Length: 422
Ligand SMILES: O=C(O)[C@H]1O[C@H](OP(=O)(O)OP(=O)(O)OC[C@H]2O[C@@H](n3ccc(=O)[nH]c3=O)[C@H](O)[C@@H]2O)[C@H](O)[C@@H](O)[C@@H]1O
Image (tube, rainbow, N blue to C red; front, top):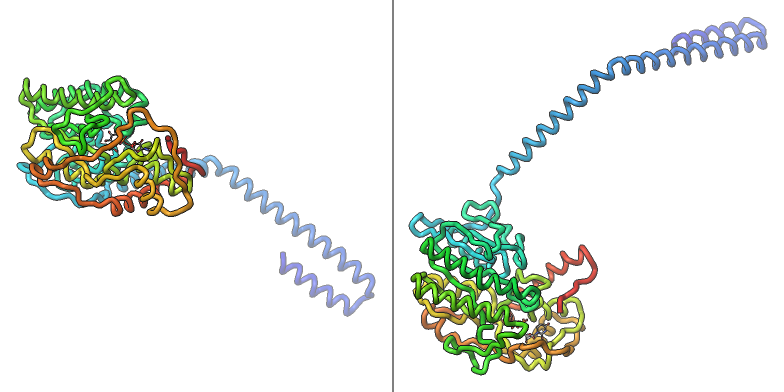
């Protein structure tokens, strides 16, 4: 078509040179108009043919597209399967031969203390089964082991019996922070009584050694200071803390009854105030409360005068003590705690200095039956387990503050304010 146009143009130039200019201009105009119309008709015809062609092939093109989509879906599936086969990177665990490798159940193994203990046992090369009802425990505390050949996670409430084969049981399952264990006192009692019976029954059936996590709370509001294992305690049996204090006291009584009647191999750890990474942001105990308040620049709330004392141990010291107790042959209760004692007022100042910021210290109403002093006598642990705490308060608190900073960042990406349960 372009060639024809060019040809006509040349022709016109030749005619112009020979004829009357006006006639020639008119003829040229008519020719150009005709060429334009022919050109337009040609392109419409071409487009019509393409459209027709596409319409004719539409069903087969649609089928091709469907086939391609099915092939892509199939390949995607294959990629998913292959990705799941790529070995996950786990922390390095020790190799133990079958004689030394133990199968160990940790109840409450997804909780704050339990998960640190699980890490230690896993790294030492044992096979670990965690049973947790996730009331205060969290999957994220043990997620780095999920899928490992030595690890198993059971969503199980130990108020119901558990039938498995194990060599050792660390029985840690129970809420431990006052606001959590007071939330449902009957459930706390069931966990510490029926749950403990179930675990002692399991230990008896499979001939496993069982370690019971008891607490400094069995000493109640103590009249003896520091508290040695010989002290029988001073607990209000009908007070708000009784569900936990008395629950743990019954757990100890049950334990020694199983020793007397069934010769079960037992260990009993009386755990004093413990802190460290993986504490829940809404734990409600003093360490997490003060750190979170200081990090957010809000006032640190002291319950009562602040003259009451506590002795804080870092979680890695505790798990070393628990493992040492399990491996010992000592069957009476053992205190596991750090004997460095502080008033709560001093503790608030320590946290404020460590975190910095503008928080002030304020006093609010005292809580009922709050033990006024607490400090472990750890002579027994030193003598029979060769154990004593290694991590000092500043070092432990620095790690804990770092942990809570990260937790706050994650939390704040969701919302702007954290409600600390007070
Ligand atoms: O941390 C632990 O290991 C222990 O914690 C609790 O015992 P408690 O000593 O009462 O724990 P906190 O709630 O941390 O209280 C410690 C002290 O700080 C005070 N407190 C707590 C929280 C707060 O925001 N402000 C405050 O002044 C409490 O009144 C108490 O005097 C549990 O009952 C024990 O079973 C557990 O072993």
